[in-house]
Length: 135
Image (cartoon, rainbow, N blue to C red; front, side, top):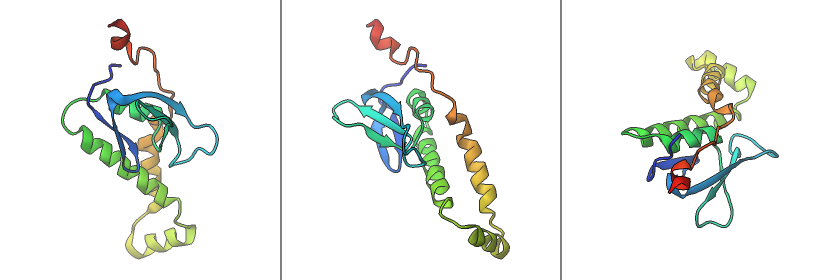
């Protein structure tokens, strides 16, 4: 995997950094949740930034190229926000919304989880900054 320089990487919830300023990831072990998945170390900041995305998602964003990358990151950020909001909708309200307007929040929640399911795989960081090490 080659990290592209100058790619804007979404950390979720409106937090964005340039790919070449991100120097490390540490998965959050305790109190991990939808808005707290990864500590992101950024060059120039003394404390890590808390990201709502997994290491795998951010690594994929750091390696992306071509048009549409920002739009894709924004769409994934929106899906993550929706997933977080769905968790606050109780069973009775879900059933009422489905009966009233046909919106199946349970199905939407499952489908959004499926989008992020591949992000639960451990990120492979071998050679992440290989091009810099060879310089």
